[in-house]
Picture 1 (cartoon, rainbow, N blue to C red):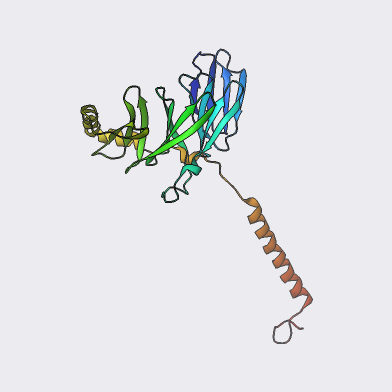
Picture 2 (cartoon, rainbow, N blue to C red):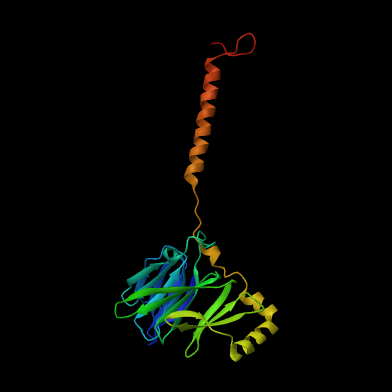
Length: 255
C-alpha cells in the first residue's frame, strides 16, 4: 500500500512511501528499475518530502514516531529524531502512539513543521544541510486539535484547528521563537469564509486520518498454545489418577 509519493526536482526519480516500512526510489522513465531503498523505519512510512532547495535530501516520517533525513539516491540515512524524546511528561497524549500526518517546509529559514495525527501541537525543526542533520527548535501548543498546517513564503505558518470561533492561526518567528501573531485583516477574512463553510470543512478535515489502522497487528499464539497444553496435561493427569485409584465403598478414591 502506497501512503505518499514524491518526485525528485530533476524529474529523474519517483519516491514512494510504503506501508511495509520502506521508501522506494525508482527511475521515473522506467519505474521497474529501482535506484535504492531507504530502510530504517519500523512502522509504516506516513509522509515523505524532498527538501526544497536541497534536491538530494529527503524527509520522512512514520508510525514509529520518528523524523528521518536521507540521502535518497544512495538510500543512506543521515539523521533520525525520535519525537517521543521531545514530549513533556505532563502531556496527556504522552503514551499515545501517533504518526506524522503532515510535513511542510519553509525555505526562508530551512524550517520544518510536523503535524502529528491531529494532536494539538506542532513540532518545529531546522534543517542544517551542511551538517546533514535536523535541529529541534520548539513546540507550538494549541488549545484545540490541529487539522492541518502549511507554510506560506513571506507570511509564516498557517494552522487550521478544530475551533469554529478561531479556525485559523498565523504563526511567525519573533525573537527567534515562533508564536501566534495578532489577528490581521487577512486572517479575519479567511476565518469568516471557513466559518461559513464549517459543516463541509468539519466533515473533510475533521475526519479520521486513517493512520491509526495501519499499525502492525501483534498475535501472540504461543501464550494461548502453552495455556491449552497445560490444560490438556492437567486433564490427562486427572484421568490417570482416577484409573489408578478406583473408588471406595462411599464412592471416594481409595488411598
